[in-house]
Image 1 (cartoon, rainbow, N blue to C red):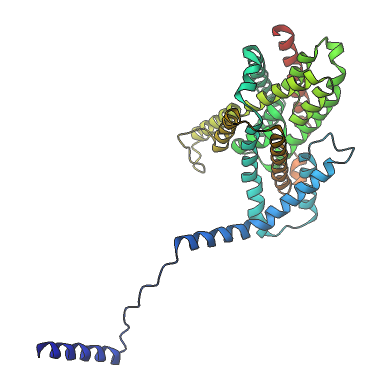
Image 2 (cartoon, rainbow, N blue to C red; image 1 turned 30 degrees about the horizontal axis):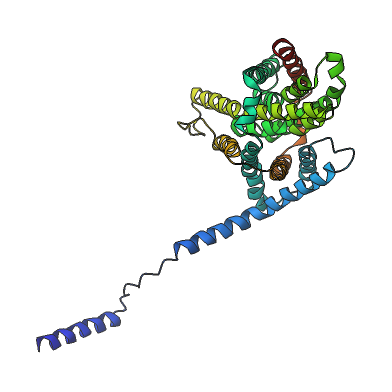
Length: 374
């Protein structure tokens, strides 16, 4: 009987609440599954990046096509990509929804390309140069970088632009410029100017070096090492050294790739200096982390380790090198689309003079070291 009365009382209370229009607690909505949310975010990100990414990749394809032309085959496709990007920037108003893809190309694709560059080298190949060979490469890199930065200071060239020209001259051309800029933080105009310098002077060296072995009394091995130690781009070294002989070509390639591996300590050093300067100036816009090693440099070293432990076929390495160059080309196309020619002209002629004298210095210093020590 008591149970029946309790049930009627509960019904009565419920009816009164309904009459008073008191809202009931809604049932909890079922949360979407985690995988569904992740997929949705992935699709949204892809749609946001797609327009700018497709544009930069299209410019990279066009630059590779121009690279096939007889008059442009000696120049890396990176330079036409920059010029196409700059032209597009000054002839077309790009919509804001392109920005995310352009930023992705300029940063993420660049870092991926630097990591892939490590798959072209093994620690065994580096060891083949011997202690003397490695010391010559390290000394050439260090003294060239310091000379370029000090000369730029004398000529009143902006420090970040000077560091980019120094990195490109001392290590591996345009690849080193864009890698160094990841920690130096120069403007797009600085990157474009530095890339133009190292491309032009490296191309001049590529054509000039093959006529010099007889005049300088260099044998094939010495000439190949000199080319690898002083010419800017990998492709330029290959063209110049293999044009002399097979022995020179093989030595030049190993020396150049060993020089590329020194990009890692250079970028780490530049990153350390940038963080130290930021700390001294109490800059709060950038959080100073405990580790001074950029993640893409770690990836580069790991890639060298993988290539040292796992046998990668020459054919696959060739395809990976093409992919690496393509990604760098896309990154530079994005930088070109952020480059203002009016601001580029304000850099003047002095940085170009710095690049020319730095190119001459790296050639003379490395040649002197080879003559004295090898």
